[in-house]
Image (cartoon, rainbow, N blue to C red):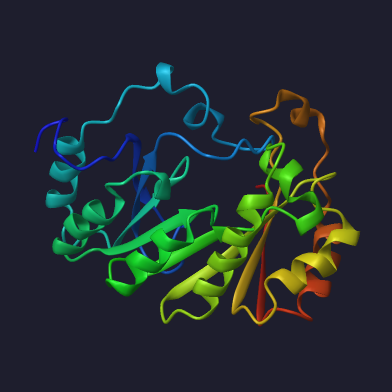
Length: 243
């Protein structure tokens, strides 16, 4: 399959082995280029605004790798950037599923109809959706001036995941100034009834907005306090800390 195969799908990277992206599974991670959000704390900024500096990763190389790893890895996770902005996503998932790998998507939740389609067609086994903050801070968290038309899409995506029969997880990066203690009840109401949310400690080493590299991450005790509050709304709350 050549670089110009007819599926519209922009790949900019491949992590061949991960033991953390999909709990209990050995996974490969495909990184797509481009995103419709501009989150200032984004830790993959080169996939958002500097695509000209990152070469396209040839799909035939990915397919060659996957063909050689059948039986050796369990799953393929697609992240970015934002995978759902690419029209070729369903077709790529079909190709990966045909090799008998589990498939997963990490998304910002801005394209609920894409999520509905890949769930309904049985193309995805796991979905991870970022929750950026409480609704009143969502525009700031996404780096957009006007998010009014997106808020309903975010809410739709949350409900799609909550009502699906696949494995799903919400992820919240607790960035000081973006996610503060007073935002937690609003976030809880947004995902109320969900099976699982993971709070991720902010990593300031690399960010889209370089000023965020000066922000000091919350300490363990502060994050644990937020998690305790979220336990009122969500069945399972997990924590991820910087090592």
